[in-house]
Image (tube, rainbow, N blue to C red; front, side, top):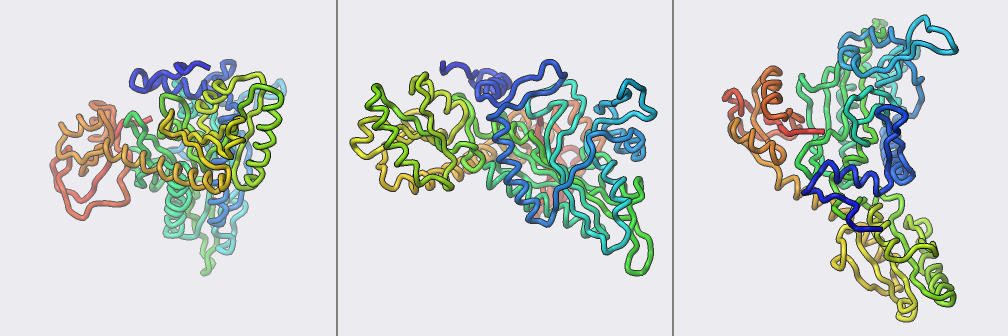
Length: 480
């Protein structure tokens, strides 16, 4: 397998990304279905690892999984004016089924607030029914004109949580719990992706929401990627779908609802945060295969000797490491090395006849390509060594991404500095402007306010655009 199949990042970042998606065997275009992709076994394996980690966190916070229909009556979408304004250009409609025109078209779900709201209005009667804490894993459809694998496709996969509460305070607590305890924790502890937790501006919030929160990550080209959102929907959808409950005073009240979700876009975030010009780099906690073992031999006798040693070495790994033995006879060791590097497997263990004699193995780290990441280590205690090495790599990838973000971030004091800084990364700026001011800046710089960080400075400053004094700081960046 040639080493030059990946376009260098410095040459063409966009092509580098597409090359990794292709060469790491993550996905390919579903050309017969506009804007869609086929997620291949390697890519889906990563998504399954993400699902498992996220699902555990979601259930640990008291939520249960459910499943709602793929098709939503169009009249449901029309009930919420802000909602339809936000999604009308993106929806796909089903107007004919069973050879007949439908009396009412269905919309292929772009998100499920409306149909879930319909059923919540039937399920909730009393304050005793609250809170209602549900989540679903599903696919959704948004008719995108410009697509990029994982980052923006017409069909994608995600989880969407939907909850109902008795008070605004409870809904707000839920929204922030998901942001901090589920999304940010998963991104940093499992994906090794540092994120900034923040509030969306009125211009950028989810259509129909009272408040939208997000986690924002920096990619290796300095752009921002919204990695997850959590919305306090207020009573907007509850009023549209008559989601009410009778309180302790026997008074009918509208519920306060939330919605929150992350999607297969996280695979794109993973690629663009950690990967290099050699291919995909996976953090150990998300790698479907953490260790690949490559036996090396020339004769049938050596093969038997080496495979016997491999079986003995890997015996203690069961239930402790996710590993694979690549004993394919029709491929050279060098081809296998390149293949597993492209696919981002964190550790490679090489075992040849001389290693068997010496009681050692060669261990190569994916996060340090070439000779720098390769060491000969004893077979004795190898399991413990590999576990410690994977932990070290997990933390190292996070610190490397954190340092990169720090190097490409800067506080700006005026508009000229902001214009320069968004060319290379995140611009932290004091802000007291309007939504119209945001639009002007976006038109002039192609940058948006990614969020209002939840951690704010104590000292006031001057707005980067209006010059007015303010205590609020925001982050401007170009984004995916």
